[in-house]
Length: 345
Image (cartoon, rainbow, N blue to C red):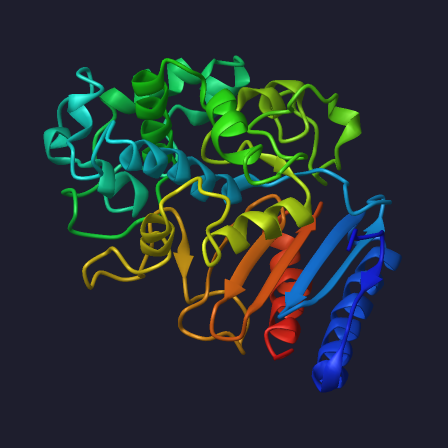
């Protein structure tokens, strides 16, 4: 059944609680929009066969496109795992096998696995990050700087969130395939999964055709043409709430065949070997996904004000995209809405 701007399909006896919880979340989001705190938001919730979605504020349609920020990371990880399925690489290969100039500071010990589980020792952002962005540097300059930067700890000994590890993983994809990451994702993952509104850059859109982040303009901010077109593999994807939901669902129902079912399944279980916090391959696990979520819940958040998760035990998924950065919207919107919806089953 096609989804409309506000479609809610409830059947059977499970409906009172689900309707109540979804309505609570809707009222919360609408209140933040009405107050002027949030300019645009999009919500997508699925519980079993019941689906709800709605746009708020400037998001006039469920097909309104938002900058996902770090929800981009599991998409990049999926590209790596697709190449693993095809025998082009192993996640236990050293990074230097594909990027010979990736040297120094124990970098010879970094495996692709470490990049996808935030255990590489690479920094989240480079020391020269602001300078690179101010001069509108291409991604290859970020890669070159990452190849030279010092590690924060020995690979595999700690978990520390690291966007630059995802950048290096994307560079491996590009060198193995001789294709850009945005093109590879479009052709090999987004299109096969029916994610028609998703791209790892603007995807031919103009910036005004997307929802604008509530940030001060600098010329290299989240709303700049530079940043939106950079295709940063750690944070440059654009999408709708429905497409993000479709991506989540793939990891529990992997059809059509993009990844092998066993590969999709292994990406959403712990790969950090007892280190904390636990990480899947590109996916966050069992934290920040609502107080009612089970331990098997996986998902990701994004600094632009995005959050998605799926609880396999409850057969419940949640996607909320909004334009107020997570530093502000986390406490007043993302976390409270996730808490409400997590108790809908």
